[in-house]
Image 1: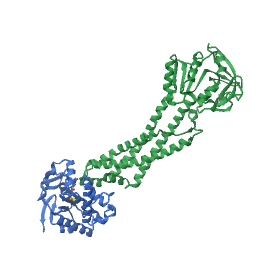
Image 2: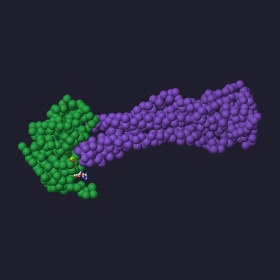
Image 3: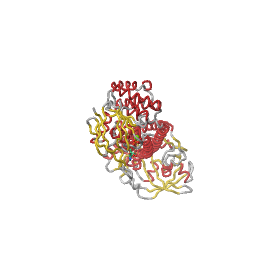
Image 4: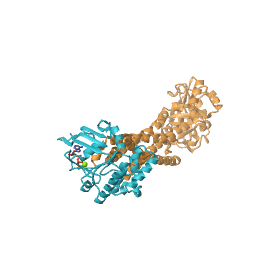
Length: 228
Length: 403
Ligand SMILES: Nc1ncnc2c1ncn2[C@@H]1O[C@H](COP(=O)(O)OP(=O)(O)OP(=O)(O)O)[C@@H](O)[C@H]1O
Ligand SMILES: [Mg+2]
């Protein structure tokens, strides 16, 4: 079952002296339960593609569907609501609200979704347990390592029960041990709970763990390799 | 709830910056409110003293006397009025006066002066003139033609206690007459202008000089309640249509103006201070927003609506302003209460030349604190709008690109 599908997706930046085609006629289908890495040299369009898939940016042409929904047709307000309920985000940094604890950060998104107190408590604690941070629940981001912060970000992304999680270079700021830990945790969530992950990376060790690797160059898909 | 928590905690992220803003608001408000209380206290005591010592609550005159105080313009039915006043329950005291714009002459000098012919006992009850005696005696010790003058006049005309002075004036027929009086004492009020102009003699001494068999030029009435002045004046006006019966507010238009000024003064001074603070707060909050571009972009990316982002920045600004506000008002309250009790002595600061008392008791209507609080809240909301809008304009993609 496909949860993301793009057709003839293009994104052209007109701002500079020369227009830049950051995403160039991309046709892509991602199914439920995938663990997909988007790779490619710097400037190849990874971030742009992820932003369009995540409903953060709009394509210049082509279509992008998430589930049954065509994102291109939505207003800004509808997109915000769609993101809140359907997509989990993990960024490279600045994922967390500095003044909230790990627990509150995770709970925050469920508050935006207007979930009940009981439901919030239960899910937040379960998720923090799963990412191995039960004992750091009351710590603020400043008091956590980079790897721990990214785990909280993953917990936060999952708290909203999204259709999939998008992560743009989630390990870029982590050392190799933390990178491994985070990836193993994501893999576990993928295997055991069928969470769909789509992430971009430069890191060969991360690429090695991916189950599907899509390579971009100048905005075009030049290879799409499924491993099992 | 969570937004309140976030907004509140955000204030303490840049502790020094927030502290500076909070202190500025507290000090600014304190300065503004205290200055207003000072002025209000100053004006209030001026108003009180004008009512208590000069005008009383309302006065009777012949029509036109106040514009042109001629000797013949007296109220012949004066005694009848006094009799009526003596039976009025709300009247505490009254005083009938003969008034003449005349000349005072001493061995050295001549000068124009207002001669007030009074019944010392009644005048003491009405304006407490006796309490303002600083030297000599209050119409005692000199049997024939005593005159009470101010220290200023004594100095100007170089006369001493028991010196002889000559008062020259016009009688009702317009003829110039003169009488020899002897200085019985000095009085002193807070109002130097008043002191330079007025001397007091007994009406019984002045009456034959002016050839007024009975009646008065002026009757001043002191009531047992401040608030009755206008109502009572109107009542007597109805009964004595040929006379002019005016409350203190209408006699001294300056007082009416002063009272309305007191009201606006606070708004103006606090308004100006708040306006200055507004820019400080806008600046601080803009900094806070710009520093958090990525964080706000992230919040919008994960699904926080624009309304909520707007609300978060609004709340933060309002909190920031509302911490300093009550602090400033608390300081103000403490200062106003303390100095309201003990007074601020500004002797020598030339206040008396302008007719103000030299010891000022700051005063503020309690409701003013509420009004100022509302003004601060209004300012806070106003200050919040621009930074909050700035945050709204952020696009999550652009904000996130910077990550
Ligand atoms: N806002 C923008 N305006 C103009 N050009 C842009 C903008 N954002 C990205 N680009 C251009 O689009 C192209 C793709 O950029 P993108 O950030 O998607 O690459 P990337 O693969 O994520 O690179 P990296 O690995 O460095 O993160 C680049 O050539 C970039 O310069
Ligand atoms: Mg990128």
